Length: 488
Length: 74
Image 1: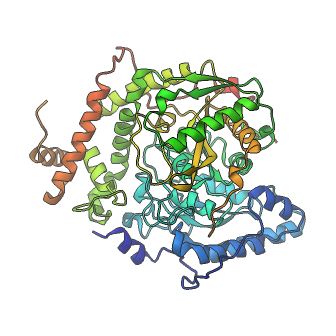
Image 2 (image 1 turned 180 degrees about the horizontal axis):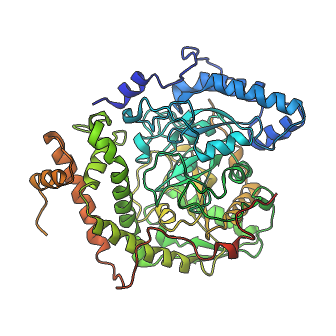
Image 3 (image 1 turned 90 degrees about the horizontal axis):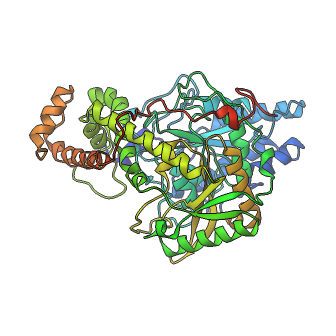
């Protein structure tokens, strides 16, 4: 059984198609910082998609050896697509705000003709014959696919081995969409949709100081993505600002008959709906007792964020969750592993020895996928259904919690990257169980240790994603945390 | 409930058509026990007799919160 390092070396995954030895001391800078900046200039023909793509590829070339955000870089395909975009725009056929914009996707997303490994030796040779729904939609909007981003094996866990946090290279970017968070923070791409089964978009968004939205379950098609758990998996946008996140969501959201859980709802004009007052909105605030065990910098940043929202006119009220919801994490664990075990059975029967080995190893960097799915395979259908019955109660409870609210805010993570704390509860997987939308955006930086991002989670009612984005945008517009960038 | 053992893990795996190598049994046993502890906690919930599983869950009246259905606002 290979180790992760052996897998990455054997697969030749890092920077495929590019020179890896060209490590520069001064990283090349991008001409823009956000999708909206780039789109404004591209649409006026002031910025060329070819130049922008070249700049992104140069930065990836310079930084990926020390960040490890990309598993595969599709440089030649990206340049081909950039040239097509440039020609179209020159001919007056501008498609919209993602036309000519470099994006990258988690390596669980099927990409036609491009290696899709899910960071596992089990899929080390897997080259899909079609694009997943999100990549289809991104390409239709004219986006340029730069490559595939790092994650823990099969997205299991909140630690992305081999990937480093741009704010402190000795720390991890979190996970499972760790490569996505790291690439955005390091300006190695402008947009990076990820996946979220237990918090895997919001965790790295918080830890890397970027924005990540887990949309309402059913809003974004999951067709063509390596799953963990069919009833918990969500896919959603990650970017450097709320506006960019909204722009991505508008493109990737929408009904898709190929996804059995896809909802037949109208895709809203999320960027347009950002600019609204939050005066008088009913904002639930996680009660102080619920924050027991959180890092003091996280709690302080959260309380300051609440003051900012109050200053914008929000009507805040403290919220505590019903006691039985504290069992939600247990139900989530059982549901997740039973569904994962069903998916992985095909691999356990035919190539179990190809999983990254955990025998005799310990630590957060060690993949435990094989052990998890082997043990999950031994649970019964009745046990799985009992967890799903409990889930129905939690969903009902969540509706009751949100009934008197418009949105609810909480810290995204209990601590900054790599700082160990013992929280009584965390606030992420409830939203996977319930399917309610939840977004993380930067709300401060730690003082001890110095300079690590802290995230604020804004969550809302089903299909109120536009309101979640609007509240996040109002907060972001009143603060400057999102303007900070790591010194690389 | 009797304490699970490596023998039980081996037997359950075989019944499921899986062969778990000897050197992995201890790891799988510990993980299996963790799942059983979660199930014990779930079983303490007062589940009403009529509670149904949420496998194919949906959200109430999405049409009520979103104008129209299935199209795009531009």
